[in-house]
Image (cartoon, rainbow, N blue to C red; front, side, top):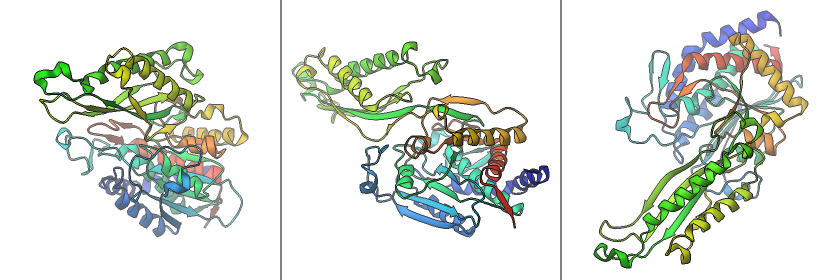
Length: 430
């Protein structure tokens, strides 16, 4: 690509930056938690249509995807699970096609009085935008969109098809991205701007969600010894799961990409409920768990080990010995994915194009990292034979209070993305 062309693209991103920040603020103001993504998706559909893209907006149907590799058990009603894809159709076959993927769903904000300012009233302070989802990952959606805008502003048109995906369910199953595969969206590479501080993710963990259900024996608390406390019974089971977590993090169990990462696999008891009355021995308890797993680790082997651990712990409890805990899998059943294990020419070329673009924008070498979280990249890499590059802006406190994204980092990522698109897809002049 000629130097003059690169300069035009970089300047175009800067020219449109105020518009991009305003768009990010508007998008962040939509509280798009699970099941409430429709208004944000309406905005995305309008913006894509206004840019002349073919817009596909559809409701995800579990029946269409439940038998596909990578499907995760659903945890709620899907009547309001809506995906949006905008497609740029190239008039030439000069370049390589691309998926620009991002998720519109955000995690719950928690107690709003523990935020410095309301989570869905975005504010900018000292170069950071604050708000739930500003970092994870609406800034990434904005960088994808305005990278395309910058090319247009510079008088350039991508010379290959581009599918701009705004998907739901990333935070709990990934079924939104899977539904895009089921609908036939394919490309030569995918780019996902998750907020990972301008580094390329070469490996990501998988995630397994499960629920442990316990039954106790109710009794009046005055005669507590005649009952069996289901909440108390959960405590040694949780302790046993944490012991399993430590075994999985032993050096001899680690995936090579995580050899130098301290404690890469994290087990989290994210929710617990139980009992009905303070003066009654609780007859039931349910706790929800998240566990990480390495790339190439088999999900069924993981389930088997979890269930054996729980059964062994239950044998040490007089009541649970004859009232086994029930394990239910709901939500994430996600395999790990390692881009580093993709030896294809397409992967090497895509990584090379991103390295070049990143270097031109930042003046530094592209760092690689192994993520201890998961992304939708696995669907493209594992099930569609498509290299998936995860590269996005710097954000802090994602999933926490006062989530924020560095707007200067977003600007750089947008410039890098625009240059990457121009290189990977090729461009024609208007």
